[in-house]
Image 1 (cartoon, one colour):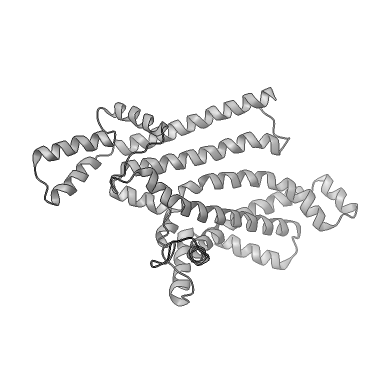
Image 2 (cartoon, rainbow, N blue to C red; image 1 turned 45 degrees about the vertical axis):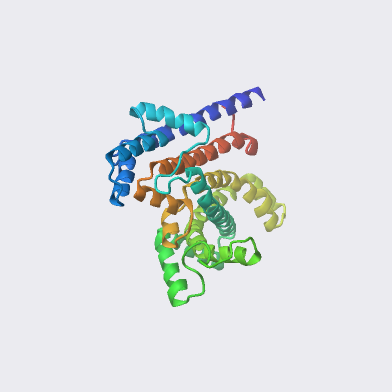
Length: 334
């Protein structure tokens, strides 16, 4: 138990180091670009008729203080960490004075919902077909289905998204192709609203599922193909154990251990969003929000979204590391 606790503490230290380095790199990349968001904001204000030099200078000082852009780059860096530690990401430059955290929380549920459901469906579908195809290797139907998903695998998901948009939006317009819900929808929680949201998520989710299932299928099929030659599987077959039980209890259970590691990584990466898919379908997630923030030069929002992504992926790796010895006893704690 003591060795496992030391192991967890070491991995937690690595988690903190990854977050620190990732956020630090993002901070300096955004702050060392030649664009000054404060000057951009002042330029936009002066174009609307404000020309009093004293008022503009006061505004400049206020904005720099508000966004933590006073002093040297190192002072700004320290100020950024102090604010981040308290969860204060400051106001958005492009949607002033709305706090960055408020803007992120508006878009985050859309991405979490879309990516979590898509990832889980992709995982279950790909692994189920891969396990069956790996065990029943002579089944022609399984071979045909596997070939379809493997053929879709090299296609970029955004290309498939465009194809789905054309087919179901124009040639056979049965599904909505833009947004998260109808523009005139009543946003009070109701069955109609939930159904509308689900209907708008079908095409974005389908573009991710069809392309992503192939990788899980290939991985699972390879794992099953290796396991079926192991002694305990051969003995079970010779002992007359039903094939379904062999596949479920002997093969799939062991093959799923490395697949769950991949699943945890995929779930950790959902905070990244799927930028191009969200843009193609106008989906109101954080991927779409990130592009808007970059185009607007909104440093605060870019840093907030980047920090969220870094923490999400690092947390997924940390959880995988500490749970792996508990899930698979063959993994030794170092």
